[in-house]
Length: 214
Image: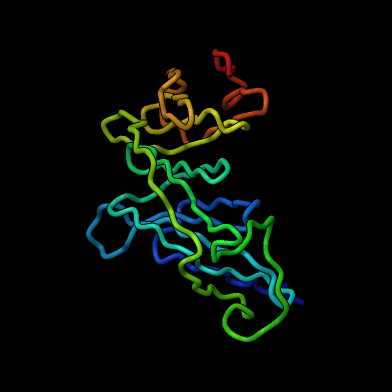
């Protein structure tokens, strides 16, 4: 017998480049876009609440953050901070979620579970529950300096005090967080940096140890 087709939870209205999970709040964060091309395709970061409803996973679209002409190519999450690689820069956003007692839902861990009901959510489609979250833009820092600059990879250290970026110019750059003061940079590749792995012992990439006290 053929395996059942996976349920489609969400379909982005733009080219989808990156998805991250915020497990402490039970959210999926998706981002992408058409960039500056005048094709009518927007650019944004979408926040989805993941829930179990009637035994099936559901995604509720909570908030759409417009990123104007900038497509988000990479994202990293530390607590409620989001680092988004857009064009030649890294944008730092903060997720604001209402707390209990202020008319909002209490902070939750993991996907919410609800009993079965009717409506599109039960079929695994995306619902829209606007107004539960908002986004604050904190910093915009240029992080790539090649002629065809593109910020391709962003990672937070485990303790959230350092952000590491890499992109088309081949440099790895370390930024103190949340101030976004540059702490270190070095040439890692002649070509582009496509991704960064940051280990718990603060080794970057393929075992290259980064000097410094952090």
